[in-house]
Image (cartoon, rainbow, N blue to C red; front, side):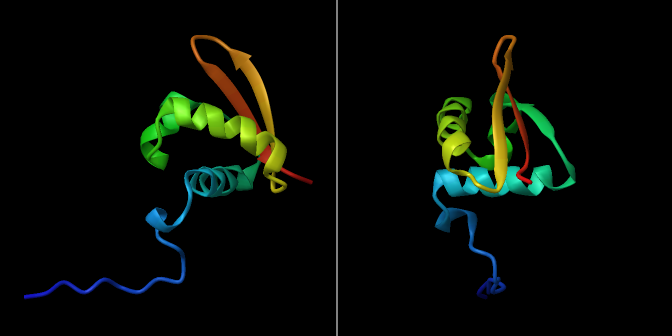
Length: 86
């Protein structure tokens, strides 16, 4: 008995770099407008540690043209604000 995977046109999560995976997640979530989040609350969903997310958010702030990324506040952890770029 063998299992056959269904082919997909979207790249598998393992095919994307950590930065690309996080960016895609944020772009998908920000489609309806602005979003606020703390890294520790999305870590499991993107398969990264909160520390990795924090480091990548600093990179994405400068490189992600599809998003506006802002370090919003700090209360027990950094809160990030994202929204689609105009």
